[in-house]
Image (cartoon, rainbow, N blue to C red):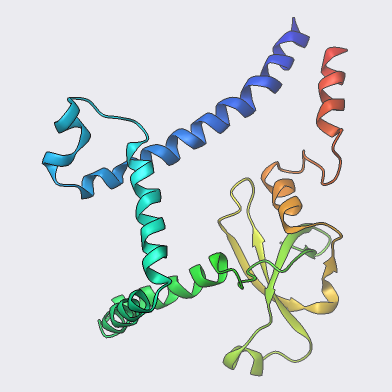
Length: 210
């Protein structure tokens, strides 16, 4: 009885979590339909909502925006728009900060997470995985003596939140794993070992023997 229950969990839990994430994402993207005039919304035209239609609209908006931004006319529009935003108090601070982060994360030449490393956090003797994001700059650099690097320590199981640290390079151990492998390791709370492709199969076989 216990064997069948655990086996069922191993099969269904990843499936349900995947479906939940996809459903949440699609429902969020469907909110883009609110941008349409009420007379053009599916519920008004068809009498019922069409799940996923807003997600398609969102993807279309992103694609068209990228298409426009890649030509000379579109680039001039973006320059004018950004020039306007940078003149508005408070909005300037938010927009500039968000744009710098998004350019780093999504740009083809961006390199937000350069290398997966081991650091001692939150105390000496306790290790966790972090990502090198660069080196300290500006006035911060003038107050740090020695070779320091900037690292991002993600939280588990949500790596989008975490802590930014500046630590001596000598206190960092570089890992022989890709950033993607390290992220999977973090999200899985250490249960999915990088490059161990048969780990899950072995765990599944062990539950069969319980």
